[in-house]
Length: 128
Image 1 (cartoon, helix red, strand yellow):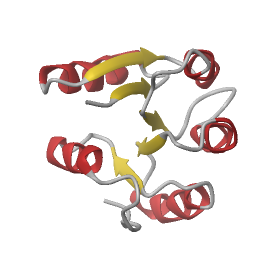
Image 2: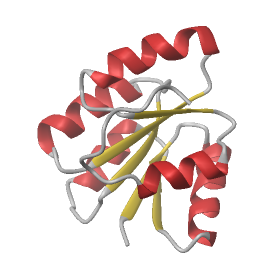
Image 3: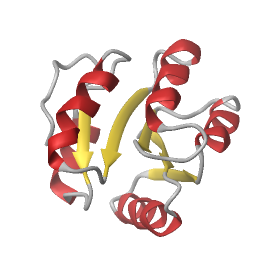
């Protein structure tokens, strides 16, 4: 079972995702900033990061870039509350750093579980 790190500056949304995943039997930790996430990742033991795209100070794109540079084996799933018209641009930007899945908020539970079950080497998905 993968250990999941949820990163979201919106504490309520982060707690919601963590609770949802915990109830599904996943091992989950929560970080409320990209800096906090990078500190946690330095300790090891995280397999998947679910990160918000729009965060203050260090955004999800920069976090993804750092994860790819420092921890290339960690899978990343992006989530965003940005407008549908901007999602494709966000997906394109993040795909340059290895992001395959970008889920819109509010999170579709089934889409999230499918993204978590996806093999690490699977092909690219579109914006859901």
